[in-house]
Length: 304
Image 1 (cartoon, rainbow, N blue to C red):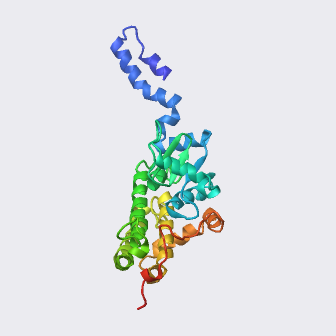
Image 2: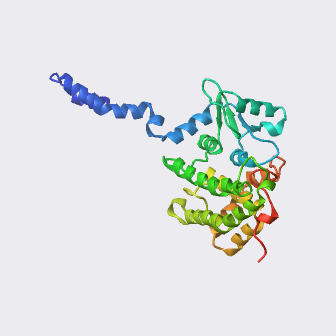
Image 3: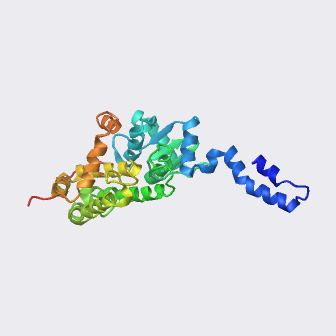
């Protein structure tokens, strides 16, 4: 660069020519003195920053004793061996913290959450499962291949789709009339809802994810996007596991039918990952009961 300046200098060098020369050499100067910020995409810079700085603890607030919507967040922590506190499962007194957040008005930087899960990370307080996952994934290296700046949006799309059809709709099967009413008050409507869900909705979403795994963006069919495990794979796994608990006969038939081999292979693959397998066998993993995924025999596939 200096030799370029020397070669370009003559007594007749004008101010305009000199400024043009400086503009030509600015990119080179930037690369020499700021190599990281010049070449690294935003996602990589975030990971680099988070890994080299002292991070505050991750604190999860969710209803105790059930997996629920908080489970998707736990799985991300467990898969990546990221330390976290599951506050309401660790101490009943922490329920007061959760309810205070829900009933409060927030603070200068954080609006109040409507409902759990809630994640506290330093001064930040965020809620809504997809929102929390979107925040965590780049920090936990679950946001897709390095250098793919659009990966986070594609992965979020896949996670949201799984949550729509295999979590939210599953919950609505046993609460088709009113969320605030007991299941026993809407059993007949739930039976009609379950019949449609089993016949039409479950196959629709299993078929979609089968196509995703067959597509080029999957990069091989083992994972949903980019050939690497992402938070969408963990979300889909939890959804499949929950639906299997709620409708074991229906899901057993779908598995045995062979139309969704890649989907169930992904399910088995996640379940056998070292950290996930250890977590599933631990007391940290809560049993299904009266949360999103409930087993009512009368709603499952009937005998043919």
